[in-house]
Image 1 (cartoon, rainbow, N blue to C red):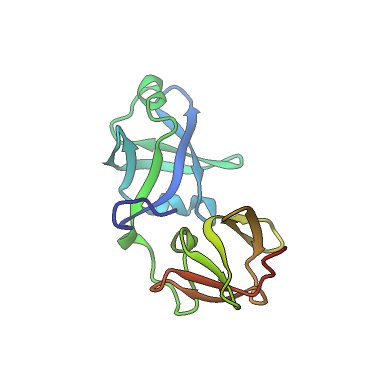
Image 2 (tube, rainbow, N blue to C red):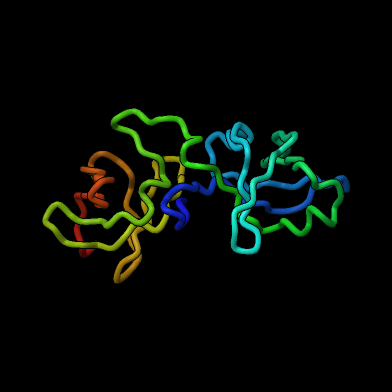
Length: 170
């Protein structure tokens, strides 16, 4: 997901809870694989309406999630104050994509238009279902479009348009 600051920040996760008594936190990661979030530094935490850089000192997969130790957070109370904070990185920290690849974050907000020119709405978010990814389009109603080449015909980031082969009545 891209935030509103001129598309410079990419939200890659969220602080979801506490882990232990020494200030470690549980992380909900949007990256694939989950532990890729640990490869970015610094993290930017959204606190009080502004992005604050924070270095993570340590982190690992724990169960089905990620746990991390943050610089300057040494006890459970300090960690508790961070629960719910979005974690972002600078867009410049992302690896370059191949010409035919895009980051999910780049699709959010694109206008979705059928091959016949019918506007369906905008990309709200994407879901990973196992079989294929799904584009959630918000318009006059919500639509779920499979992210497969039979449906997704063109991703025009410069023009802000996702062209799809989709029946508007479906």
